[in-house]
Length: 117
Image (cartoon, rainbow, N blue to C red; front, side, top):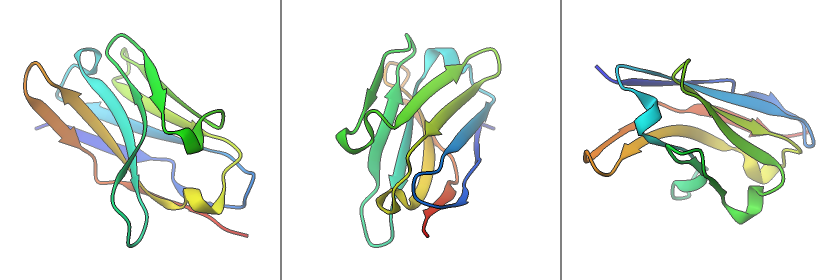
């Protein structure tokens, strides 16, 4: 059974940092494009950052320069380093694995990030 387990969320003050981790089991993450999404209360889920199987990265404009996505295929883990956090970053953050060629996509259960003074 494929599992994506996020961790590292929490409550921080504006300007602080968090690192999210997504541990993946039962698939070979190296052949999957990985992504982080987030969903704030009352809003649609939105894409935050992606890293392809060849480690190309992309970010939504509002997090460019503050967030960094990375992957460790040996550990089957994807990370999201979040610096200079803002209250508007508050959301549940979800990990996603996608392989378009295989037609497969998986989601984690999410981890809460709250940025508040």
